[in-house]
Image (cartoon, rainbow, N blue to C red; front, side, top):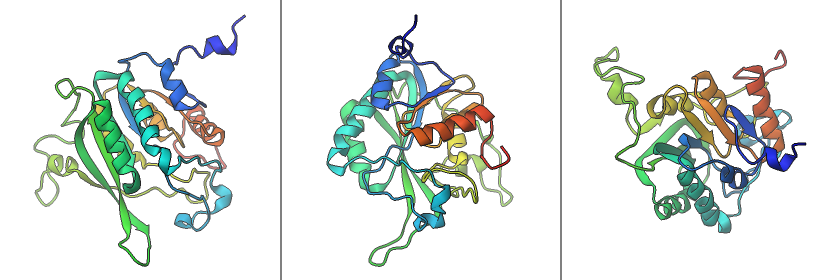
Length: 265
């Protein structure tokens, strides 16, 4: 008879798990993952209330977990160290972060021995209005790799070298600039989690840094964006989400094979 402990001695792909990533990643063999895309928990007191981005709290899933600021450096080192172990030599990782956590993540990246390739800025359409300082309307994305000489990157996966805009500018050049102006997504009247990356960002990363059948991993799945978009683009996916409500939401999206959930599906 197979018990639960023996079942969890390895991780399958094209599957997600309701599990702490620091425990789950230990079940993944080293040099196995092609690409990691993730938006780790903040070190702030985030409240999924109606006032946040005009969301109705009745449609925002509860259970958002955060890490205490004083523990964030060690937390970052722990999960980034495991990510380094499971990445292939040709693998890359994209880490999204607000400015308040950036120092700890950069220190952990350096301590683990990963190489910073680009510091990307995601500029979205609006930020939270503040009285005594400038409005924050961007997010950081740290693009790192394990081995710079073996790193996979597909520069013409979205636009051909000589492809132009209507006004004659290079689409290839514009798309590869390190400031990405991509709008947030708003799922009006639909079930959602408090935070999620737009599908367009995930798609862009997947096309530049992976190919079909590559294994794409997210240690902090949240709503399941990386797994869902990865599945849409024929990547093998895997990930962990510690919050049961979020895991169930992501699992439902994958099972029904739909990007957005509404009352009809």
